[in-house]
Image (tube, rainbow, N blue to C red; front, top):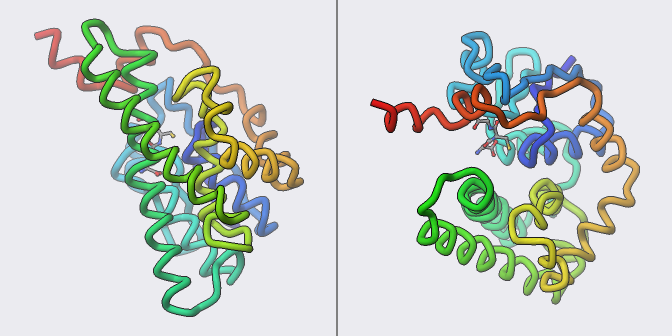
Length: 228
Ligand SMILES: N[C@@H](CCC(=O)N[C@@H](CS)C(=O)NCC(=O)O)C(=O)O
């Protein structure tokens, strides 16, 4: 049985959606990152990067959400484009675009807008600009075709969905008005029964919600250097 190390946040959400889409049996292992459980030795033995999600499938250990999507797609042979090199090339490119662009810039935009101390105008401006630039690239692509790789729903759409869930928190309350094509895909995926099931995982465990001093210490360990 697959063990799925989960926290209700964007990167684990993509994997939750894929697991639910494939119907693979799995056991949910909550990792409460606001309590610092990502730093436990038992978890860093699975993911040395100390972040969710991670997955253990027998002898196979996989971490990083987009690597997990690829692993599950290859395992099941589902939600992949055809095997033609030009199709696979597009899949790798867009999957990495989400992994290295959408995710990190959106995550840093959230950090600086919502959690960083002032002065932060320079950082907020940079990450808001870059986050918008990346989301606009997705919107332009989705203006031309129904899904990220063309006519079929694939793991790249799932990767986008994970972060689309938090677009208003990343880009502001009005953001959806400016990203109509991403919104169209987001709404469509939300109607899928697998997406509804993936969302119920949020309440499967009582995760800590307060962003108190203890949570900031374990989530933003860099701040300790400022205290000395
Ligand atoms: N590149 C990683 C990033 C994982 C990541 O940042 N996970 C967040 C949740 S979305 C996390 O576990 N944060 C806890 C922490 O930073 O301590 C992936 O795509 O899986």
